Length: 177
Image: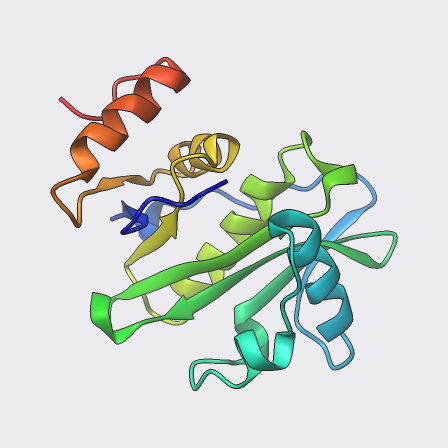
């Protein structure tokens, strides 16, 4: 799918109101450990297609901290990831939900919401009070998940209100007045 530019942004202004992370039996959540690079690449490749290298995409970024890269594991195997990133563009109080992915064999279990919540808890531990993310118009399941987590459309370009209205129609909920 072709991404429209600029990417859509969503903002959650209330990291102080996060729900607890409750995972189904057999699933666990943890931060990045040495050796998780291949698991991250597998998850992100399955989620987004193409090939991305952990070292280039994440580890070489000055904002990389192992605790910022979160994983949900099933039977000890990482199957979902999301990162609690930081981008000075948004200000010191704002964390960035970054590189959210789940292997397709685990889709439909609410784990995308759970791994995003885990990253948001990391942002809160770092003292952030709000969170932002960027997404694409065609990522409707992800947008539904972000809405459940309290994110709202955050217009950063004049082409976005109409794009948000179209997404709202597809989801059956008003996103822009």
